[in-house]
Image (cartoon, rainbow, N blue to C red):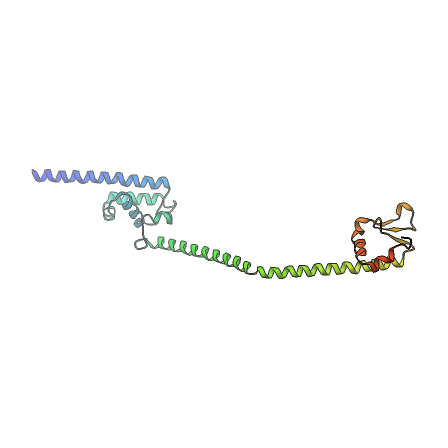
Length: 221
């Protein structure tokens, strides 16, 4: 009689424990479903359930009720979203993670390493540009040389204009007061050839070069 009662109590205890475990597993699966998490293998899923519920993997594997619950969910979400690499770090380490997870972590590290190399290249370019600053001073000297050439070209043009005006003073008159070139052979409304806006640099240059300026000064002045 006692033996039967003990067996009955053990059965009742086991059923009660299984009921609690079923509730824990169901709750964990519900959370996975809400978060749309799927797993690549039953091994990964068992590791997750063990972490969340505390139920040993051996029990999850041997108990047909538990095993069926896990397999049913795997079948249900076979096309769902896999466990992310970041989430996998909560359940696995480098020592016990499945090959797929280890491969993903390795790819992450390679990507991070590639990004660091790219940042290093950019920093090196910035440093090289800073080193080239003295060369910029040479570029300024080149710019100064270009400005000097521009001024020489202006002088050549000014001398040529002075020569033309000197040769044709009977027709073209340089009016220093108004800083204009006048065509005295034209009718009054058409006599202005070049006004002071265009001619001010030329007349200023003449004032600094008396040898050319004297040719345009009237003897009566």
